[in-house]
Structures are given as C-alpha cells and as structure tokens.
Length: 337
Ligand code: G3P
Ligand code: CA
Image 1: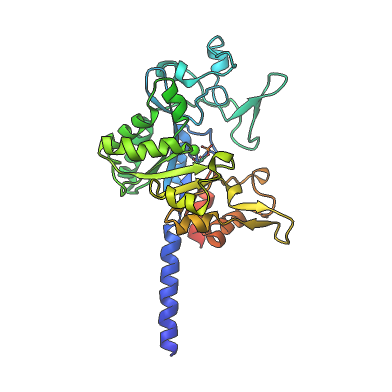
Image 2: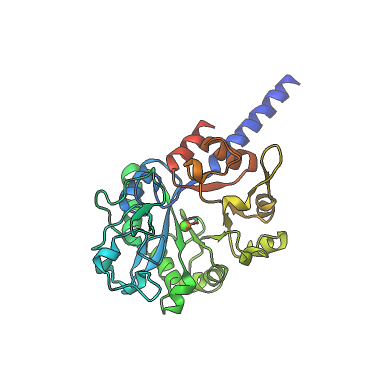
C-alpha cells in the first residue's frame, strides 16, 4: 500500500513538473523593463535571460519594409519631431508608413515617452532606462530574426519568435499587406508549420481569420495563431464559451489582458478570477496574458509583489505562459518552482 502511494506520488510529481516545464515566458518587446523597447540591445538582453519566446510588434514603412515597433507612429519612441518636424500628418502624428526605412534609420530610439503641457518629454516608466541616453536604432523584422537564429546557433538554445501584426486593417487601407509580408518573412526563415518555434498574434479578428482562411493556404504554411484581446466591447462575443469554441477553429490560443482574468472587488482577497482561462482551456486554447510589469504602479493592487502576481497567474489560475517586460523575473520564478 505504501509502495503504491509512493509510486502515485512520483507520478503526480513527474506530471506536475512536466506541466510546469511547459509554461512559457514571452519577453515583451524584449527586455523592455531594462532597455528601450524593441531595440536590438533589448532583444539581445532578453535572449540572455532565457525566455521561451521574444516578442516583435511589426509595422510597415513607405518602401514596404517590416520594422519592429509597437505602433504605426514614430513620435512616442523616437526623436522624429526634431529630425523631421514637417512630416507629421494633420492629426499631429508621425506615421511609420510615411517614412522610408533609410529615413527611419536616421532616428534615435528613446525609452517610451509622452510630451507634457510644457512640451517636455516625460517617460512612461520613470524608473527605467534614462530618456535620451546612448544610441538606439529601429531595426527590421529580418534583422531581429537573424539575430535570434544566430544566437540559437551560437548558444545551442532554441528561443522562438512571437510576432504581432500591428494595425493590419490600417495597413490594408493604405494599400499595404502587412500580414502577408510577415508570413512571407516567417516562411523565408523556416517558420512554416505548427511545430515551428513561432507564434503569429493579432488583436484583429478579421486579420486572424484572413490569415487562417486565405494567407496560410496561399503560402502553403500552417503556424500557431493567437487572438489577442482586451476589455473593449468588440471582444464580448468572442470570450463567451461558444465564442471561444468557435475561435478554436482558427486559433491555437488567446492573449487576454490581465484585467480580463482577474477583477478587483470588495472580497477579502480583493479580487475574483473570471471564467476566461477555464473556458479557453475547455475550448482547447492556450492562454498567454499580457503584460506583467514589476513596477508597483503597473501591478494590480491586490497583489503584494511581482512574484505573488506570477504565482497567482502561473500556479493558481494556471495560464500557459505570459508576456513580461521583465523576462528574467518570470524565468527565475518558473525555475524556482
Ligand atoms: O501582444 C501581447 C501584448 O504585447 C499586447 O499588448 O499593446 O504591448 O502589443 P501590446
Ligand atoms: Ca504586442
């Protein structure tokens, strides 16, 4: 009897370890908690931290090159206002799509900022890399894939790419097929099947459906797809049990915001857990929420520390992975467990 108990315990421990090992860390915009987001140094630093995937947000230039930037605007992460003061549109924004790659490469990348009422640049995350120090540049998706694949060769690791098509509909309305170009880059670099170490992610359901129904068959590829989502009304139907079941025909997983999974309330714990993760798992979808930031003001009030937040999501809620600006902290947390 005691032997059976021992064997069962060992089986449970082995299974738990296997499940824990499958949980992933996605370096959100690289090691963006430490260096300006989406720069090569931030990606190299992230790589050295040992995440499972490094994230790329991708937009397109005037001359159809794919660049790694979070927005289709340049004005919150570069010095475009100083270098090209006359190139903003009527809305006051500087659009990536209005600049050639050669022009964009003349810009310096800064820690993300906004401009206050006095015209001064103010960092979104004051504790992070100082604004305007050192030299950082925009780079192409191809450059980044080549660096990650190069490091995979030189280190013997196999870190993947987790690439988001940003504002696909906007690009299409401007005559640019961003999503197709991203998939062509995937194929060029050998990411062409569900077994490839790559995810394609998008907030736009129409984009996901087009990629699944038209572009992947046309390009003779079949890669892992993730539907990103936020609290906006457009996702209300998608997050019902039926909606998730229907989504599972197109996607392998979902990427919800933290606030779609935990809601602050007046209970003793200060929050409750929604059905989203359970319902998504029941529909066969993996769940990779965003964005896990270690700054106190960027964390939900009901957790006391970043490790507590990671414990809540990885262990108590049971997500399959998460996006973090501090990939080292998430990697360390998983290894500790
Ligand atoms: O793609 C997952 C997460 O990055 C979504 O948020 O706005 O940082 O792209 P965002
Ligand atoms: Ca993203």
